[in-house]
Amino acid sequence: MNKPLPSAITSLLIAFLALVFPVVHAYATPSLLFDKTSVSVPQNTTFTVTININVDINNTVQSSRATLLYAAGDLDVVQVADGHFFPSFAQANDPTNGLLEITGYTTSAGTGSTAFGQLATVTFKAKKWSGSSMLSFGCTASGHDTNILSINGQNILNCGQTNTVAISYTGENTPTNTPTPTIPLGTTPTVTPTPTPGQSGNTIPTCVTLSSNTSLAVGTPLAVTFTCSGVDPDGYINAAEFTFGDNTSDTIYKNAGSPGSISTTHTYTTIGTLGPTCRVRDNNNVFSTSTNDCKRIIVINPKPVNVVAASYYQRVIAAGEKGSVIPVPVITPTPEVVTIVYETPTPIAPTVIPTLSLQPTKNPLENLVWWIVGSFVAILAAVLLLRRKNPPPPPYIQPPPAPPAV
Image (cartoon, rainbow, N blue to C red; front, side, top):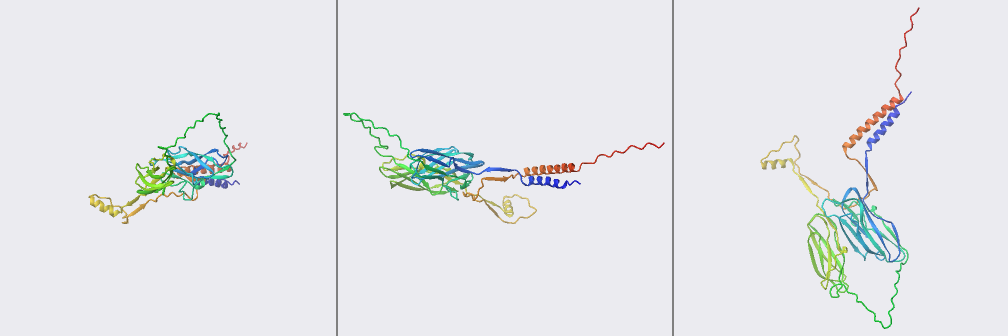
């Protein structure tokens, strides 16, 4: 006896699983990664490291900050090149503490960058001939240093999606000595004096760094305190010129010494991504040149919106005052005022972000189509299995009549 029931149940189970687990889409996790994980370099030799950024095609981001930590006694930052992933770029280096901050950003509201590319390329020079050190991203659980900000101002970078570079120093690389030319006897050598930069023998001051007490905030007015630091080898710093990135500027006069720092507080009333800068002036009234070391990025997002929905009775009173009539609902609503407060986005990285996120399709029409197709396939498979296990009997053929008796 044929038993088609188990096979039919198996087919139905397969179809049911196809309906329960709909189509899924894979998304890449946002990341900031060095293009290498190790490098060997002799003393007095340079090497480059590229910072690759990947935000996936499903994310649009307004800015990204990469804070690099390096051994200040072992390495010098020679050059920082824009990777052109964002339309605007800035960098600031603190060679004393081994801190390099690189920021790419867009200033157009509601727009940003997507997919993947290069944030920047950094060239370092080795200062030591033996030992090792580490190059890493300064990233914490709160994400306030290295981050990737969406167009809503939320940090979508998990610190686990960064890496490090192990640097080993492989000996001394002594440059080839050029022999000193021999001066014939009786000949007076010609000495060309080295010109001193600046005005009238003055050395131009150098702006070292620009710092701020915040770089990401919500809502205006926003008061931000900036500190501009500089050095003057042959004098002292007596002023600092601040440009705040919102078409305003201010010059603060103060005898700060050398090295010296001058601070000021500016109140922003503009929403968006702003690029403040500064430069210092010495006692000979000579300003330093504008460099990326004295640039910052300030991101100010809009405040949350409070929406108040008036009750039914408030609408009746308002309509009566205007002389209009509103329809009376069948069910009388409760005379309450409902306040909807949208949650303020906070730049906090998620606790755990898997390397690959699978999210089910949320389109109800697509799910309905899959359910109908799956049901049809299941029924068809069950019918075919039943017909195969129990083929129909052959048609009945009536025997011919017997010949008549003689």
